[in-house]
Structure formats: structure tokens, C-alpha cells
Image (cartoon, rainbow over all chains, first blue to last red; front, side, top):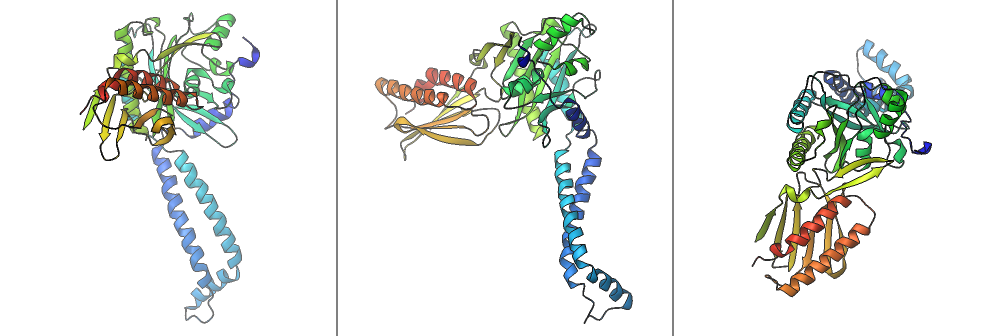
Length: 281
Length: 142
């Protein structure tokens, strides 16, 4: 494989950090940001409108009130500038709070548990792992786009630090099965990677796994589970790809081969698409 | 009057392609959002227009494009999937020759649409196949 074709996650560390900041588990905190921003914005606009009436001359007011208004009146230009700047800051806060919009993670996880139960048949949980992970498309100015985890099924491997790079213009900057699925406008992608022997891979195996999974080396290094069967599909809201649902397992028997298996997997994906799409909107 | 044709999901199983990307074999299937659940045919006597609408699991805003012989095709604004086709029809039911002509002009319009850059090619492929098979049933209403 030519070097230029290897998938690359350009802003991996930045995306991982931003994804941690944008996490979905702090709804109350985000609600407070939203609330304070709106109240602060109204207060700033109101105060700015009143400041022109601060001139105490010709107004019958108590002495302490006249002194305060006089002090504000003498500095009205500075006040106006400060309030305009505050308004800009508050707008950024509102935008940030919207960007950090939280989702009902419990409901999403319940749906993912159901998807895993209906998609993977004859599960052998003592030897294998069966997961469903929901990634959301995220972006930040000058740092590109990435896919960050919003919810994951089950209680094992509950860490949600995996991020994949996505880029509409350069194929190379779409990493992971999730990135490949996003690159294809969320069409369903099914892939089987040769079974790795255990979680610690030898150099050759590691390179093969990285290549087969469209991974950047840094992403592979931080991966807990080396799955062998993958299915990814886009979750759309209003026709736009909102995120990617990835179903993966270490059990090679889970690759849909027969018609009933394909039918079952299609139905599970359809259920997931409807339910997750509604919760995400 | 409307004619409603439910799409058996087995008919959509053909809508997948095996591709090799960077030496890796993968199967690309139709997204659940792009798989038509039903096709609805409706004739508007006042305008002489026959409308074919594709139903999906989601609702998406559409954009329309006109093609030769009065065919208008509506596609999903973001996904590019086929939402509907409208065409001028004198009166229903159509005879065999008129159905063949209609099928030809619809296919031509869809081929033209497919050659344009945009999204939803897998959906267009399956929609074209479904129309080929079901157009006669759709226009068979009185």
C-alpha cells in the first residue's frame, strides 16, 4: 500500500480533547450555561438602553442616587464598550452551549442495547464482545471534523474516548470504519477483518489490522477491543448525516452470510435508524 | 385515486455492492434511510399529471429538476435520494404502447439524473429498478 493512501488523523490530540470537553454527561452544567447566557444577554442589552438616561442633571433624585448616576454618566463611553464586549462574549457562550447540546444518554444506551440483542444472534458473551457505538459528527473552527462517541451499549468498555477523523475533501483523512461510512454519506458498510490473535498484536498483525480497519497508528494504539466484524451506518436528521452507528464484535460468526441473517440485520438497522434519529433531532 | 405498492424488503437486498478500497473488501449497502418502504402513484385529473412518490422511514425536504418530455424529478435536499417523479399523462388507464413510452422516458430522465454529480447513487439504482418493475401496476388505475 502506498504511503499516501494510509489513513491519517491529522488533529487526533485536539479532537480527543475537544471531544472530552463536548462530552454528553453533564446536562445540568450545560443547562446552566444556556440559562446564564440568556439572562446575561438580556441584562446587558437592557443596561445599554438605559445608560443614556443616566445624566443626573435636571432630575430630582436622592443624593446617593445622583452620585452613582453621575459616576456612570462620566464613564458612559467605557460602559458602552464594556457592555458591547460582554454581549459578544455572551453570544460566544450561547453558541458554545448550543454546541455542547446534551442528549438523553440513558435512552440512547437502551436503544443500543436492543440493537445489539436483535442484530447479533447466538451470542457467546463468555468469549466474545458485542457492541454498538453511536458517534456524532463534531467540528471546531480550524480543527476540521471528527466523530466522537455519544453512547455505547453494555457496561463493559464504557470509556468514550475514541475519535475518528472525517473530511469531505480528502479520503485519507477519513479514519476507521465509521469514517469510511461517513465518507459514503452514511450508506451501510460491512467489513470483516481477519481475526487478530489476542489484544496485543505483533508488528505485522498490527500493520494489517490498521490497514484493514482504515486506522491511523495512534488510533490503533489506544484501542481496547480489536473487533473482527463491523457494520456501520449513518444516522440522519432531516436528511443530513448526524452521526454514525457502529456495530462490532470479536466473534467472526457474526458476519451476515445467509439471507435470514441479512434480513435480521437490516431490520435491526432500520429500528436503530428510526429510534436514534428521533432522539438525536 | 391512489395506488399504493408496499416494497418487500427482500427486493432491496440486491441493492448492495462489493468494493475493494485500498486492498480491503467491503460490502456497501443501502442506508435504512434510502430504502423505499412504498411507492405511491396518484393521478391529478385537473392538471393531467401523474405523480409517483417514494416513501421512506424519514421525511426530507426536496429539490426539483425538470427533464425532457415534461418529467420532473424531486430529490432529497441533503441525501439526494429520489423522492418523487411527476409526468404528463393524457388519461388513465394507459394502453401497452403508452406504458412502454412512459417507461422509456422515465428511465431516460433517471439516467440523466444519475449522470449528474451528486449523492444517492445507490438509492437511484434501486429506485430505477423498482420503477421498471412496478410502473405498469402504478398506472393501471382507472
